[in-house]
Image 1 (cartoon, rainbow, N blue to C red):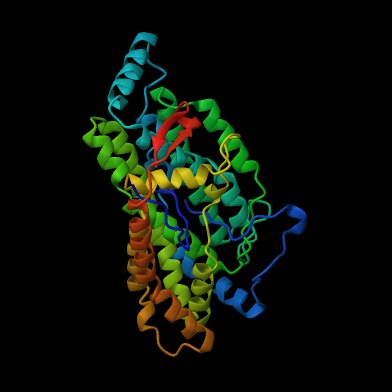
Image 2 (cartoon, rainbow, N blue to C red; image 1 turned 180 degrees about the horizontal axis):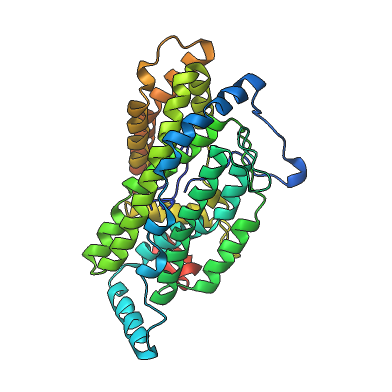
Length: 374
């Protein structure tokens, strides 16, 4: 048995999302009347970000896929235009393929789908980003164009997973829909205003959803090649998105290394968590905690995965080799570059404690109140 390690960035497998777990994080949760604008960009920083619009148009927007070349959810699920009996045959075949998948797998898949379905919140927050300010959803800025198109690509993930889970008959859709309702309606706010902080917030979960290949592998091993293709297709989208956000970070580091390093350090030090942290089904106030424990126990997304992601990004962005950093930037560099080993040590201690604990059962409404051992 494993226990969940509290990570500086608590991420679910989206994807869920990435993971298939995604992008989308929160620094604080508070009633709207108490939300304060913090970390606002000074004019000179805002000008740097705006000066990159031409670069973004040439280097980032081409990483989006044209609609006509993008996969759509209908390619993976039974075709409702078929005669009724043929349609039902496809549904029965889908259900037969999912029979051998364990309940833990479906729980993780549900959590991923719920995270994806909270997409309206993510786009709203990105629209308010300093340097984007797409207040009416029509801005021609490359950053705003990216946000809208990225949201459209992500939207397919939740639609596809939801349809597949619905047809499987393995999950309680009413309880899942209640959880989505609660999550989208929650008072959730991201107070980081600097673009690089928010971009970094997206890179890690997008990467997480790429490296959490367990979902596709297990589906294939259990005899559901269609679900394996679904997970693989979603992961491919997340890989493109991760590359785009990583390129933006690289560019910001190039033009403002100290400011970028401070922003990255601030993001990591604030222990940003996924919005799925606010999951609630009306019954279990610790739903996200219990869900995350299952995800870690079955190996979909673990503390060691998180440490691996940090090391990968530190290497990609060459953070250890940044030179000429001033005061706060140098401190942030030391903190970020030393974080992965500390996470691994915390996980080792958590695993040691877990071996001494008695397993406990937790019921999950998403799978008809079946009890899973944590």
